[in-house]
Length: 358
Image (cartoon, rainbow, N blue to C red; front, side):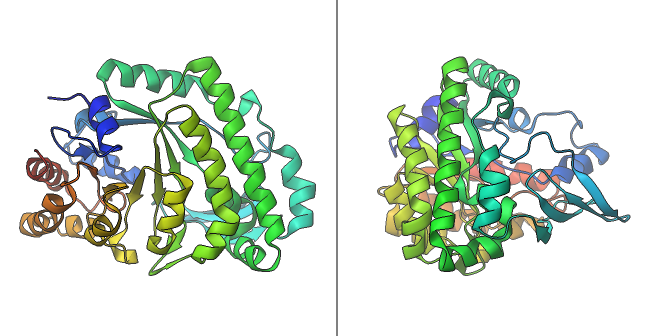
């Protein structure tokens, strides 16, 4: 049997392996609910418990003003409205994970970006969590797991500063402003990686989070992606490739039409392939499976049902097909929420890996 480092290395190159890979994300309250039901200890590490193949370290802080103490503007039993170090005023739900409501932003156009944000975005050591990276890297090495530096890339760096609406309007009406943000963040990301890797050594790969779509549509046209966003992706991915590091890129939402550009930028694997947004794992495999690996694409809503027959159907329709070219990692198409029973999730991975063993 292969270890996880060799397995994921081969999967990302679509070379023969013993089985498909395994990885997952969970909503923060899932562990709390499972622990409350005495299914799992509250302090358990999911990666160890379920024997995932990858270990991640989110080591960078890209907030503009690291010294800013978030200000609570308004608070109720269920929500809290805060201004953060990006100058963003966001309302978050206190009882469960959800995308925050965008209330207001200090930066809405180029002048505010140049005055308030850009001067703060320097690659300084206080932006790097060396301890987390060092600890997770050592842990992964001890357990023979594939270790990734994870974090956001340029798209997910910009919208926390100015919001999706101002960013997308800027892409249409003042593209040079957004190009400057893309260039600033891509340079910052590369420079932080240079500092981290020189001190602590390289990871096995890089995992970027870039939520570039919503239901049935990406946030931008392929042409706009190619002109504005892809140069930042290419800069960061070219740096990874200069160190022989493969790149996994996550995107929630519909990004099928952006995928040729993302592949041209150099990604090795697409994750998470969200079914309810219109993404189709088997269709993507048919189009791109010779040149791209995949992680996810299993409809998490099937797991909501806690019905083994429905889970069997979902897995049996997809796993035997997408495993053919050795380029697949089992993962839901989102994160596992607390309405999925522990036994259901355990059955899901056991069934998936049984189907996915070569």
